Length: 316
Image (cartoon, rainbow, N blue to C red; front, side):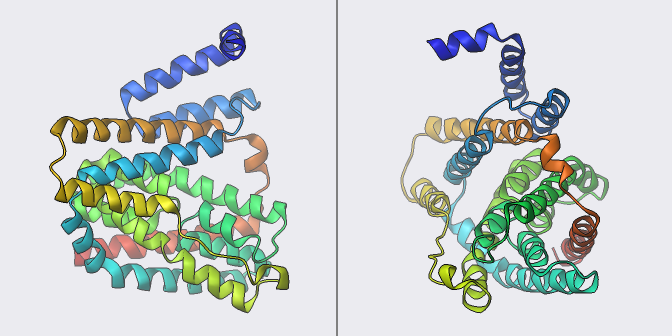
C-alpha cells in the first residue's frame, strides 16, 4: 500500500503510468519506445528501477506466448529452409566486423563485442561475451549503447522501407531477423509490419541466437582469460518454451479463446517491453559512445542492411 500511495503522490510517475496504459491500448511498440525514451531523456532521472530486467522478462514471455499461434510444422520448415542462410550470415558478419575493427584500429575487445553483437543477438551477445574477454564495464557499456541506437533506428525506419519497397510479409520477416540486432527490436519491428512477418522473424531470430553457443565457446577456448575458460555457456530457456508452446498448439486441441488470448497478451507484453526499454534509456548511456565505436558499428550494420535487403528482394 505504501508503494501505491507513493506512486500516486508523485504526479510525474502517475503521468508515466497513465501514458503506459494508453500506449498499451494503442498497441504500437515503436510509439511506446519513442514516447518512453523521450520522457526518460527529458527528465534525466531513473523513472523505473530495474526497467531493463523487467523489459527482458516481458519480451521473453511475449515470445513464448507467440509460439501458441505458430504451427510446429511451419516452425520446423522455416528453420530448415533458412538454416544455411542464417549460418552464412553469422559467420560473414562476424568476420567482416572484425576486419573493419582491425582496419580502423579499434581496440581488440571492443571490436569483438561489436562484431559478435551485430552477428548474433545484440545486447545479449555483448553481455555474455564481456566476462569471457574480461571487458571493462566502460567497454561493455559503450557497445551496448551502440546496439541500442542502431536498434532504435531500425525500429523506426524498417517498416516504412518495407512498405516503400512493397516487401511481402515473408521478405520483411527474414530481413528483420537478419538485419536487426536485438530480439526485442526484431519482433517489435516485424509485428508492426504484420503478424506473418513477426512469426517468420521470431523463428529465424531465435535460430540466429542459437549461434551464441559455438561463438562464445570459441572465444572462451581461444582468447578467454584462464578464470573464464571454464565458464558454462547456456541457451536462453525461453527458446525451448517457445518451441514447446508451438508443439502444444499444433498437436493438442487447445481452445480457440486460449489461442486468441495468448496472442493479445503477447502483443501487449511486447509493447510493455519496448516501453520499458525506452524508460531505461538515459543520457549517460548514450554519452559513452565514441567515434570508433560509431564508425565500426555503423559500417557493419549498413553492409548487413544492404546485403540482407538485396538477398530478400532477389531470393525470396
